[in-house]
Amino acid sequence: MQDDAYLKCINPQCGLEYSIESTNVQCEKGHMLDVKYKKTPSVNLKEVFYKRRNSEGSIFNESGVWRFRELLNFCQIDTENIEECSRYLVSLDGAEGRQSKPYRMSKAAEFINISNDDLWLQPEGYNPSGSFKDNGMATAVTHAKMIGAKKIVCASTGNTSASAGMFAANEGINCDVYIPAGQIAPGKLSQAYQFGAQIVEVNGNFDDALKESLDDAKNHDGYTVNSINPFRIEGQKTIPFRALEYLNWESPDWIVYPGGALGNTSSCGKALMELYEWGWIKKIPRIAVINSEGASTLSDLYNGKFEGEELRWNKGNPNTELISRYYNHLDKEGLKPKTKATAIQIGRPANILKGLRALEFTNGVVTTVSDSEMLDGMSVVGLNGFDCEMASGASVVGIKKLIIEEIIKKDDVVIGILTGRQKDAMLPVDYHNNPENKFAIPPRN
Ligand code: F0G
Image (cartoon, rainbow, N blue to C red; front, side, top):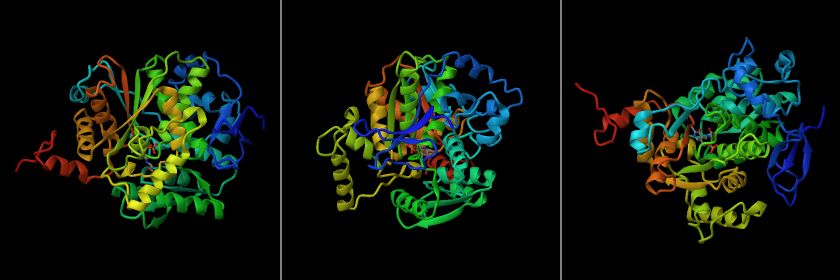
């Protein structure tokens, strides 16, 4: 194997490097890792990617992830050789990322109070397992296969477990999923069962489940597919790739995500850092992360709501003590993340440092929205004929809030990511049965 791709610690003072076959999700000193590439991909690939939309029978061109394979070629294979691609690249028959692109949604634009020409919403819920997770799972499971893993392991608020279960069943490998008992949407839970994953119920929240799953992976030879795995991040870079390609690689002013474990924020940041460094984009879009009010760790720390200090990446010198003190404070006060948007009910975002790096690079912002706002966001997306879950509604109402606060300016071009499909069947039913809700259409007798 060549060494054009390798793993590198994200801490500039440390910078330890590892071979691409390493399964470490951290360096020896406990810092997160990045996949790095030595060669600069030619800008001419933009043309190649465009042409691949006519897939000519190749599932790797059909796939919205592997269509961009030169920008995530950690397998270091000949990317034009389809046989070689089939030996290495894991795909759900080309379906991951295939249907995702930005759409106009006029009713959402009207609600947000932005010109319909300036707003794009990109549903990731039309992925095979129903969420953006399939983008990163394709690459993580590719790496798992590359190193001969027999079992993949994850903790999940639901969507990761559905995606991991689906990929594992397709690849014929085992899959253990750790879920916070009673705290995930029924549709997500049923997917994990349906795909034959081994469910492990944890008495606690997602943060507890993640801890248990990492211990299991370590002690029982499991391969972790949560977003702390740097190979997950590689696949998720294709979410902004698809958005940017659709805009002819002209950067929007903003890319907006709901914030949970911050894998999306991290991957968007890495994608933009690379594209900028490679000369593929001239302008850096700003990232906005939208936390739920009830699970607002990043917002609290970033906006100086804890001890008055605004937590920053600080060129690779973040105040990690401040984060520890915040977590101690949560423990001491018995404060648990609480939101009806269970997908983002996370108190200890595992990718917080990569998230901060992304925010620094893009001059990003972080804010919060309430549960009822997220439900309105989810519902107005529905009125445009698109499906999304409650956590994804955060992108819509987050944009609205940032426009009211004049952080997003009136003629800024904004892309909001709708991260997942509705898997909590009763949420829209309950919403529409309450006439007081903004977009409710109650049933008639
Ligand atoms: N939206 C949806 C629908 C999600 O499922 C998640 C995370 C997020 C947003 C947050 O994204 O972690 O990249 O900041 N779900 C994970 C799971 C945690 O286990 O399914 P993030």
